Image (tube, rainbow, N blue to C red):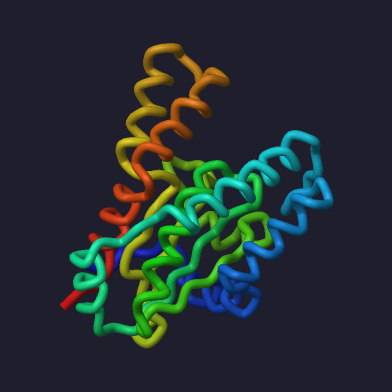
Length: 208
């Protein structure tokens, strides 16, 4: 079932974003170069964001190598018979994007029906505002777009459900998000090895 959009111009915003989008490989190269230069994407350049970019570059390299798909996953992806555009809104400093994007890329590589592109959130705020999470511009946000039928089929993000629950429980317990939550989430991602993200991603694909 298609997700209803709140404004009539969502289609135009998606097409505009796609005209400026880059491939995953180009995104990885860009993040790697920013890490070398001590910079980040986005209008705000701070030491903290540069450090997160450097950290994410290392983490994506690791996840690119360690994320594995089973024969069952491959068989599921082979059932996709609809041409699908996957668009992810993100920034280089986003901690949840580092484990998520390698998984999306692995899935896209296995199907000729999937085209995966990356766009920067802060360059596409109008589009981001169509896909808020609890009213916030949380990233990464993955959009499943059927260009042929001009239809948003689903979205995902900013993190797998168990990781989201980890954050919610932490906030409920402490009344705020303490610095150690980042380490807790990262430990969860490392242990999970992208498998929950993979499951949630496949569940949103229009499989025959």
